[in-house]
Image (cartoon, rainbow, N blue to C red; front, side, top):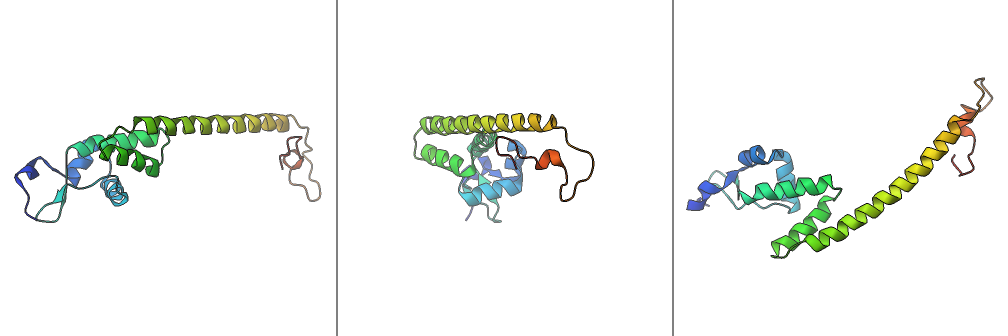
Length: 145
């Protein structure tokens, strides 16, 4: 396919890497997943991307930082690609993430309490038959094994 007059405005994958700070391997992976699409290919077969892909990559990376999976990000981008705002869907996904974090915090808080109890145990430093360390092998009231 011969490049059009718009091809001058398009970015080769190396230029996209430089502008987005996302590796070529990752860009190709995102393209494979359907998160990105090359606008066209050069005569030499090089991928050519619209400059708007830089903002799309920034959106993907920021969404990942917020804990969204690539599948979730893809769902948001599909909404955007249909000409709609994905903000409402994003809010729902972020609410789910907050609930997951709250659950993890509760689990970690419980674990911290169990660890503090175990650290107060008066375990024998002497070897006992079949026991590696009585502090660890002592079953806590919370059922820690």
